[in-house]
Length: 89
Image 1 (tube, rainbow, N blue to C red):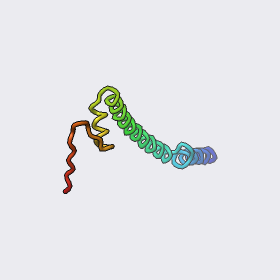
Image 2: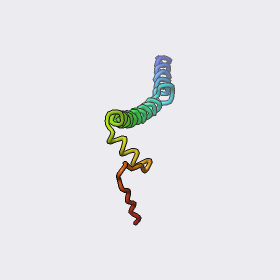
Image 3: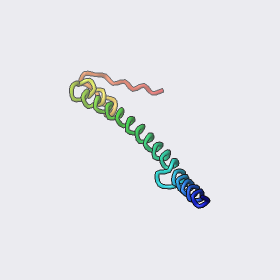
Image 4: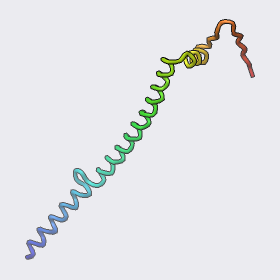
């Protein structure tokens, strides 16, 4: 009877050790879950960024207004018969 109790205690101790410290332990699962949450958030941010870039590409392909706006802002271009005023503060 004593041997059976010792075997059961050893088995329970072994299973508890694997649960808390072995492969697939609770700590490891929590770390994986945190990593998964971080990656999911990064994917969502990149998805939103891609949607914004796609909308900008569609706007650039369809309309001249967006193209003119980028030329003015980034390249400093002006239209013919247009006067450019630079205000220095």
